[in-house]
Image 1 (cartoon, rainbow, N blue to C red):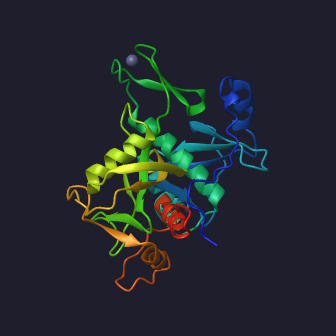
Image 2 (cartoon, protein in one colour):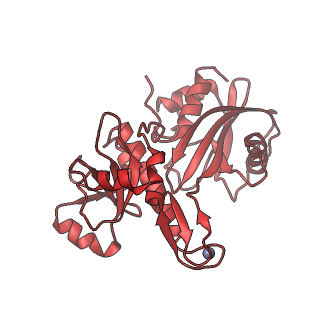
Length: 296
Ligand SMILES: [Zn+2]
């Protein structure tokens, strides 16, 4: 049994039609059973294993949706930086999302919703001013739109797609490592999708840039919201020509071919040379598992 990949499971019902009119959500916002995540950039406030708190009336709350089997709405509130001391005095602990995911401290559904909230708040922080005229933006539609006070331009939350691929040839695949990875960890190759590219051409370009290989076919295997800060990871297994790698040392510390048997050992953390697969929060692990199962 393999672990689920973090952030993929987010069964919240966003009720996006409610964002259009205020009536429903104002009532929900002030209801006894309304709850909110309290966040500030990388900080997530919680008390032990509880991450959802009653809303205070003056808080500006963005609507995330209705969690399954709950009648109360779930919101997110951006806690101002100068409130950190006060929050600590009120008994709040602080964690970051990556640690919560790695340590499995929250259930998958809450983790998915926390990722949604974090990426939404990041967008608000980075788009305080209009990119067209420079005037201040103000939130609308319960946090899902910004409107410029100067030129009236509407801005919408952005998600940046990233292709992440496992290049394969028969029973071998290519994995690379960046210097920031923990010792021994090798992972799939990755890069941002650029304007005008398909997923397939982005995979071919990045593979060629990073390890010098020609890509023949690309299969999209899975995708994952990645809230660091606001991406969608598009996981692919590709077939490439079998050649010696030309590693781009600006991007990667090392890259090499691994056999299917080696990958199996890396996933089980039993590789004789100490090579390891990435952890369960990374979609790269899912790609490696698929490859090891022989479904490429
Ligand atoms: Zn403007």
